[in-house]
Image (cartoon, rainbow, N blue to C red; front, side, top):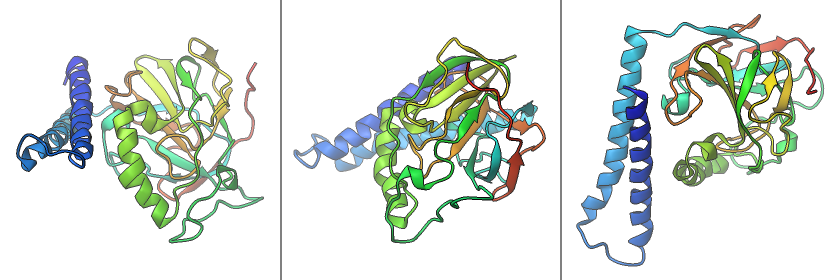
Length: 279
């Protein structure tokens, strides 16, 4: 599937979702001028596009599996992995937004306050500051050029209780889907690593950017801090490699972190503490 077709599919999918949700709202105030079941066609169309694009990616992976690209880890200190491509592909259950080989990691410091565990009922939500990952420095994975950098979206409360998760999936997630890729990944940075490889850091802390589009960065340089913006249940780092800078059309590329590899789900790993500060 060419980039142009992928772009068209992404636009069509978003339009269909908008139509479906608009109908859902309007029908609470007036009767729709057509059969009730017709209102479900946009939803079915959006799902069909998702299935078609996913099939295209799976076929590509099977016939032309992309080689892993080795880069530096985006953090230092002690962390653990969630939603890792070491355990399943696509790691986040979708190929959309170049997430095929994406990984989430959370801070697990050996000393100091521990990461709050998910709960069933109480507290319903926690402040981002309660999590050791919040505010952790994000480092450039390689010498690169900043293609995109934004940090204007707010860091919200955690969604790590049962009520919070249901709210994230059923209400907030739907709204962010309609808002497009940037509302899903929140504040984010895209780096051009060269040779058709791009790195994306999602859920960046509001107001923490030390770089902007066009800047050159060196491996290990601190660019921003870990936050809890976008479609995020708690402060964590979402990292991925992809073959283009546009999240709507990019396809995922597997990664390996130098000295770490690809940590599996719940695997704890430690990265050296040295880093190059922002000039």
